[in-house]
Image 1 (cartoon, rainbow, N blue to C red):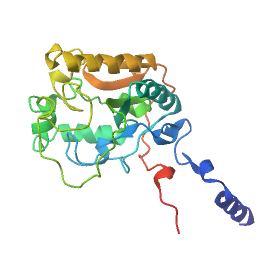
Image 2: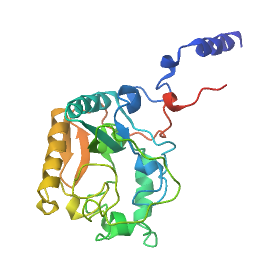
Image 3: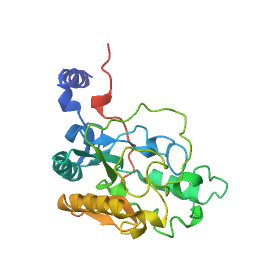
Image 4: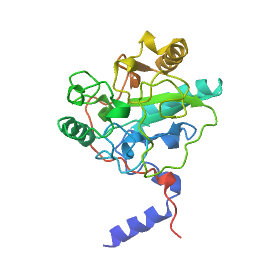
Length: 258
């Protein structure tokens, strides 16, 4: 009992920095503690996603990554900052239970609340077979990210429980949901052939922006996925197997007790 009491007192006396990331498995970090300038809009922690509700395992709107992946994103962010641009991340580490949640949802033909925006021309039951979703997601290994680019200085609007009006992700910039990004031809998680990285039908501006994103991420050590312009995997990722720990808030975002 005395030993446990002494340990508890020692932990209370530790500086806040020593607690940072303490709840994460070894090798993982909170992105905001590596680079707080990268904008975060973690869609699966809320309801504005293709399912229409928070996904299992997302207890906080927080980007968690392997340490090498987070450092690589910081390098990419530094290069974009010189162009008055910034990364915005939509998904990072994804628990295995979230992947299973997607699978169960895909088999329920009655749940199509978000079809008009995220998959207006795609049969939801074909999402896994078509490669839009994976039964064993690379995100679960902790070094894969979904992201885009926003102008420097962009900040997220206060979140609301109310969903925005549904607008097709394939609609032109200015007509689809405004996520703050430069024009990439579609919205994020647009489960449609227009989301394919090299699809020329998105136009010259969007194609050039996709190429800029792809080259920036490649220089930082990531490889793209041809079917989704927003999806990148760290080439030399440290983990081969997936994880299933829940996504929790960074200690730096928690208010200290009074």
